[in-house]
Image (cartoon, rainbow, N blue to C red; front, side, top):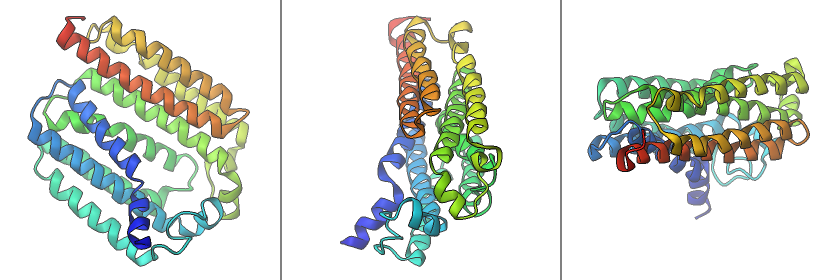
Length: 280
């Protein structure tokens, strides 16, 4: 039972399910209704995210002895070999599901799968590179969902940009939070290389670009005032989170997560209003 529990923990099930929901949101925002492709895309996303989380723990097992000793591998619930095999099985399931989708969606899935595997083995701990990859992976759930139903558009593109850049911001803040453990392991994360305050300044610039992009669906007439009514407070929460991060990175990244969630709700409400309420 402890091993089964440890394997489940490796997947970070809530994060994996959230990723699947975001893929569903991408399909909805794009106006897709085909249940088969949507289900396959959601399943592929959940499996790939779970596999990525598991393989991340495999490569991070020594760092986690310092930063997160309660994780399954450091506490002995799951052996490194079992964690690696488990992650590869999850990736295999994701590939099978993705191969049923249109070519553009398959291409996105292929790039993401390579990025997931290369992140922990090659890019994590390199100044900025790992942050960018995680951001692109997080944001790509939306265009993946849209591509699964063959309906990529500018609104989904803005959602991708907003999600990717805000995720990059959050990853930089998290690196600031983890500086002690990362330095002990000899990692060269962005805050370690350029300094804590300079890294936070860079995160603020990245977030500012995301905030500036957020009104585009409204300005282009694709989403109406219901979208603007919610995305405004969302970017306000994200801006406040960035300010808070200078004093308390842990609280700052938590606030940023809430702001990102509210921004996703803005797209859902905006598309729902356009489709069902006639707001354009």
